[in-house]
Image (cartoon, rainbow, N blue to C red; front, side, top):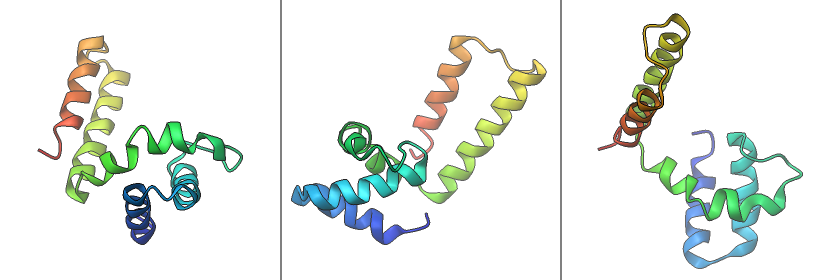
Length: 103
């Protein structure tokens, strides 16, 4: 997390309904995460704020992210080498593991 103070301020702005701070920091977060471009300031509400992506991301710990990235790498290599079934069910199981990573 490059700028944890900005994430904390974003969360406070959400609770205070401070639209100016939400939009400014939401755009910075969205650009850094690759979800938005600098020109998509109007997309902050539906993509960053409404989706709750920041709150969800903050619910994971660093060790959870390490596990998740390991699973994603294993899944990617497994799909490409044929060791992992590329069915919808296989992908759903990966998503479930990621969802439960912090539990």
